[in-house]
Image 1 (cartoon, rainbow, N blue to C red):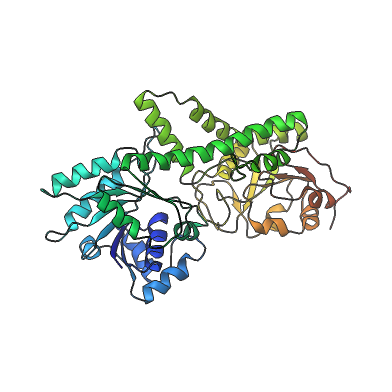
Image 2 (image 1 turned 135 degrees about the horizontal axis):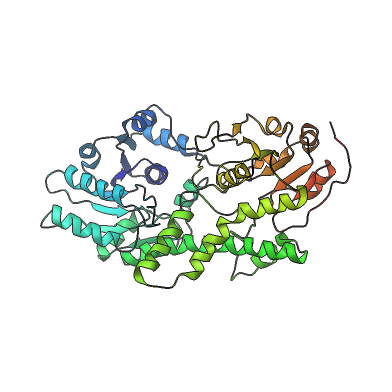
Length: 441
């Protein structure tokens, strides 16, 4: 088993560190945020990821997993250094590599004597970043520099541990076959296709994967608009489409659109790369535009049904960009809140993972979905948490002032909604009026 240093205690770093320990390695995570390190040492893992906390605590007790703020301590004896820091977007859409470069400087400064671990670039970075790091380390650590290998992550929030330990592929991008084999060997006997390529190919593959997923979502959302115009239920269309093995059913669920920490920034970075290299990118730009206007289309549907929206009381169910996580970054639900507020709507929100949100000025955060529905003219399901599928919708109707429920994720059964006396509005689906009238208790 190997000794590994993981740089960065964000989502990718924490999941990678815990999973590498589970694979039998000895892992030290280094993080410059002293408060975060202190919190983790005290057993408080700062992200809401299923099974991560017990996995981290178990291997910490076994002495396989630790965390520190000291690069010298973390790098001592390390054979591999996994670089897992963030690459947030700049204003022009390009990836901000300042955290990557700062970490590289700290790695170079923290190595003892002639230590030369393999640097494994896990962060999502533009094509050529591994080459840039090789040049940097050669300049700082003459004459040998450091070997840099690209090993992009494909972790879905809420399923990160599963995706690390049961991946659908492992990509290793290296210029030296020996280094590629060494990094591939860290994953042991994980039964997944291994793709060994050069680092630039690995870097572009990561961006291409997320861009394609975003394209599938925007495609089905565009088709949802056409389905409504034709009187067709898009869920039936997407089910039939997904049965074609050339297409597949994943990411073909119409709704509010895509968000989170990866798809928006990675697509923006790919668009920026295309612009910089002079390559046409009309398709990628269209994917972004379809996603941007999804909340506005929903408001158009409400206006058509209810007339002017100013003064409307809205209960919003779900704030995170997807269920089973606490991530609000680029959440379509937040975009919807801003659009609702631009129409002078009053918004009361509930999310199982959100107690407060600084991003939501003027929004009341409620402790449960029923409280949010009190006096509401409209309820909008914006994030498809399982909790919302099992609610007592008759009770919801009795608490509301109006009778409209918008299923912006097509996650609910329309018949259960209409039987409770509510009007059901989905995305790309026919509007269904309630089967019974009146306020129910």
